[in-house]
Structures are given as structure tokens and as C-alpha cells.
Length: 68
Image 1 (cartoon, helix red, strand yellow):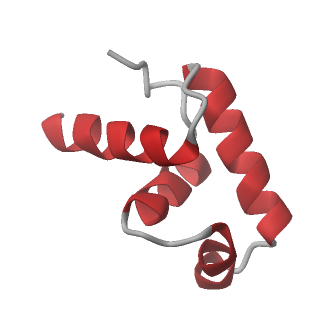
Image 2 (tube, rainbow, N blue to C red):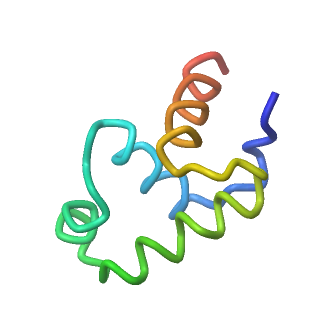
């Protein structure tokens, strides 16, 4: 099981939106961040969890979050 406890709230918010089908560009628009900032949060989340794909990580995150 992936350890999602290391993720901060910004990373969690972006992963939730990604799991809902948003792109980095639409997440940036919704959250008022730059696309670069969104991509950096996704990179950090992947680094912290060891999951190489943002989409896979977002699905894993939402599944685990719903379980808790």
C-alpha cells in the first residue's frame, strides 16, 4: 500500500482534481495556480510516494482516502 500520509494539502487537492478528470491546465485554472506549480506539486507527490504516474497516483490516493 502507498503511504499517502506524507502528502501535503496542496498535493492532495491537486490529486483529487486529477482523479476527477482535470488536466494540469484546468487544475491551474480552478485553483489559481500556474501550470508549472501544479506540475511541481505532482512531481513532489510522485517522489514522496514512489509512484511514477500522476494518474495512477491520483487513483490510488482517492481509493485510499475513501477507505479512511
